[in-house]
Figure 1 (tube, one colour):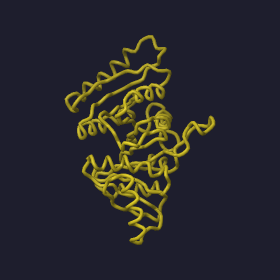
Figure 2: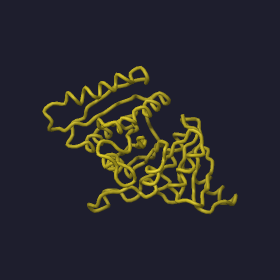
Figure 3: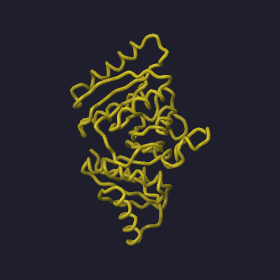
Figure 4: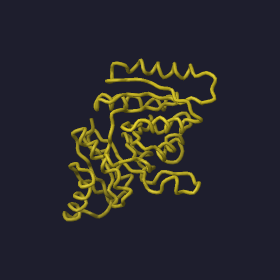
Length: 264
């Protein structure tokens, strides 16, 4: 499905946490992991050292991309423009929300750059994402909020379900105080009918919760081997980094990797 899984290597422990999921995805696709760095590592010895370290973290074969002209986030985007069938994998680890003492969590600048500029799918490893098993997945969970922007993630999720033989689960969130949710159920079922037969196994579920963020996180906690797929923005629009508040806050707390695509 992807020929090139593009991942940054910035030497920090937090930055390296994307290597195992990227390597796992490259192995599943029969593709190659592309290590991107913007440090002066052009000599053979430096390249070999970084490549060996990255491969030891991921277990996958790796290629190398050095860009001394751009920030690391922009370098990732540039690399994706010159590689066939690319996907970018980045880590949003660092300070966890619990350590921010009430302050609102924000994306690391590298991830914000990538999400704002990339025209290709981006797999994000959040602060709480467990990467000890690489990228375990038997299911792809797709979240929409009823907007045309959020629905643009559905075709990509269908591609993943077909390529990796995953269960496909479409979810929506309704207020736990709503008297009736029939309209939300009808909406999910209408989209489910459109994709039935295209994926190995498809279902939909409406989650009742105080708000969309809590509903999505509640659902994902019960699905250990799932990938969450979302558009970078939906009904509420986008903020800094081109990402809406719901996907932003979900990334900050979700224990599963999140597949994002910027809607057209």
